[in-house]
Image (cartoon, rainbow, N blue to C red; front, side, top):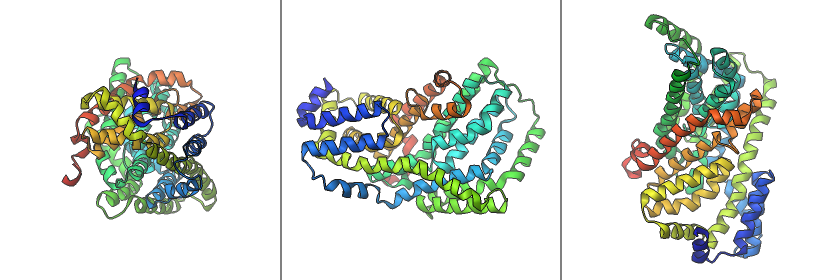
Length: 442
């Protein structure tokens, strides 16, 4: 019904449907996403004749010719250096000292250190791998079943794209022409809300099943532990402090904050003698591999977005959806369902560059604040990191532990449900996303 209305409103033909079918087929065959997007875009342009094929090269270049994108490899490299210098373990020590007073303290510490790592790297997969290697075995030793321990790390690592600075917000800001710094500020409360929801869920589950004991420390013992951990690891918080202060004070752009964080982290590694010049090739190659996955997707999505815009697909989508219902509450729920479904089968970056230009006009049509729309979109897509069949974080923790993905996914269900509650609150309560912003953005 919906596709019939969309087809009627914009007169879509095989120049649209064939490339879409090719894209779906290539993704199903595990062809790299950038190649699938590029094939679909070129096929659409050739069949429709809306743009000369010679324009594709220019479009590919202009799609990634943005200063803001320089921040992406910088934050990725910062996270890699953080792990190699051992500074990430200082975060874990402080997080454990903060939560050791309560039952389930190490599980809570695991969630907190995921949030701390997210505040530097901006990447879910990097956080899942780094925190997973440090905590999963200790979680099992503390009494947690291994599948649940993996699910806890995978859920906590979802904050990688939700707590600023986030690569996802840099990309959606570039796609929709919105300042990344503004999105970082708006995402602070929603990102922390997701972190708290995961933390509370783990506490409740731990209370129900008594996975982890502990929490018998007196106030004096807890204070002593906290002071000791801060004394031995306070310097690790210099890096996130620079990032947050620089960006939110307006003194540094996200790119400048990323560059500063890289330099400071490397200097700290040399001072602590935990980093050597021989470590650089491996660090740079590792970061380049991650960045090499993201940038081609953005580049090849540019001609696809242009082709869809020329064919009138976003406008046709809006008219088709609003012809079914004009209730903003229902339309917002429909957008959330689309985003969650997309997040289950495809990575965040292609979802952003493909869906953001299509769904943004619908959000505008119902009067949703564009900042709120961006936060809702990224948060909803973030749920997909722990939902099959893609569930990138599930694959990461499964890869480092050998645990079954399906077993991990089953234990992740409580976290998915609580994250969905936060997504709904973000979607229907604008103040969660806009309360920290200047009045001009509200």
